[in-house]
Image 1 (tube, rainbow, N blue to C red):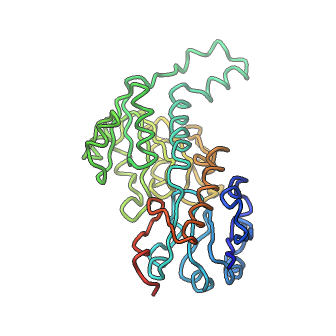
Image 2: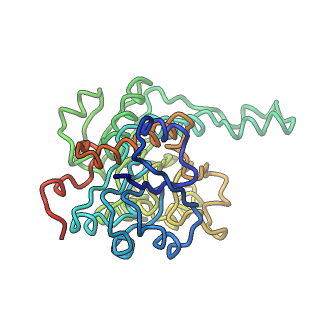
Length: 327
């Protein structure tokens, strides 16, 4: 028997290394720009699909009678109906720590960019305003307070790096034991609002869910320290974008580093795009060259292990399907 795996056309080269020596694996590519109806039309003969941000729910499942597994190139899965997959006994796989370091480094890069005034000082040099350099002093991260919201694969790595920089590192995650956070050298906090008021930098690393939707709304942003910086490399929708724009325009916040937006790409009219206090990236924090290849390899490996009856439970979002029959 051979297996057909549907993969994005942009998948990294190392994906195919995971299937070396497997004559029973056939890859079919699809364009990221594919219309959802055309995507569904491709599902009839596939046994597995590896997805980027392509939505997947009951209509796609109905179109995929042979489907055995869905895998994400990454760890987020808010575009996928996990409950629908679970009802039909289909596991959803993610790539674990394959890009965790990359995202943590991007969040740290945002912090350095604001602290060291990278963009402003570069502009002063190239516009021949060298002697104006004392108008905007850089600052140290040393002994500054950072609040990390979410201490999973990425947040924990962010915490380690902030501790190494000798920052006062606070971590808020009600689902992680406090001793684990202390083991990172960080200080666990249970009062999110109280911790927000102390932080010079707030870095978001929690998943998007009903509980975290607009977690940083106007009320919570108002609690932030005057001149603080907000960083979001998690998911759009966790931060109320209109409220964030207002906080930046008023001078309440010094800056925001955003790798994610509510709608991607964001609309041209989004006020955050025109604010000089914002540094943006097009959802690339977890897509370094190295991470891109690690994620691709892991995604294919995850699929093959499921097809071989040896699934990686640590990479499975809904492991209960392994003991359940499809509905």
